[in-house]
Image 1 (cartoon, one colour):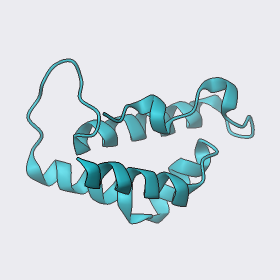
Image 2: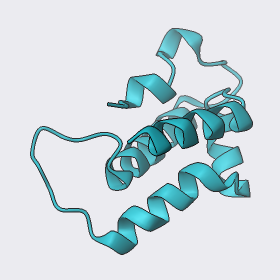
Image 3: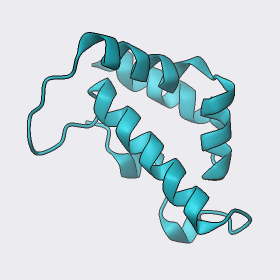
Image 4: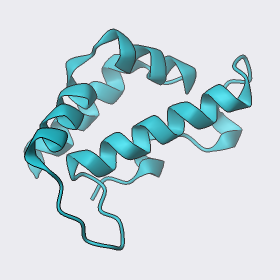
Length: 92
């Protein structure tokens, strides 16, 4: 199961060229997208609406400008992150 720590680096590995608030927001964006996509299950089992799940998966795998921005805010290579997420989504 994919968790936020698999995608979001620890504070020690994040570049310090962005304000902490942007890094925290970027981490929360990814945490929510992972939760909504079903890749990261919270302790409480929640039903995910199919449209929300589809939108989250699209965000995580499309390579959109928004996705690229949030990856760069965390100093992560967008294409590498996208490919890893696609691999994990197809694996189930």
